[in-house]
Image 1: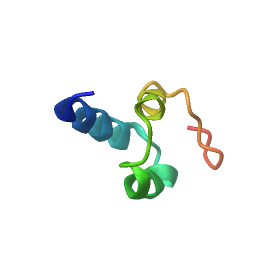
Image 2: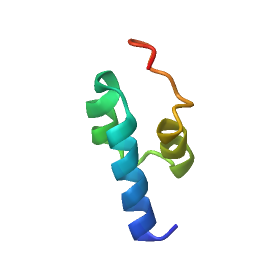
Image 3: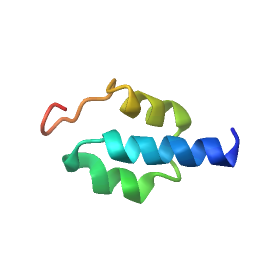
Image 4: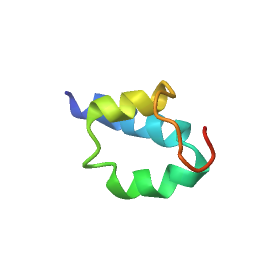
Length: 52
């Protein structure tokens, strides 16, 4: 994946993730696979704390 596309995915995922998971994602965003970032953006991964 192109670097610009990866940066866009990361930015979108950080804006879509719930507040409970924001800092965890921010800390591990470099290791998070593209498929997981896409799932976060599409709200396919729910937070175990708040359910969002």
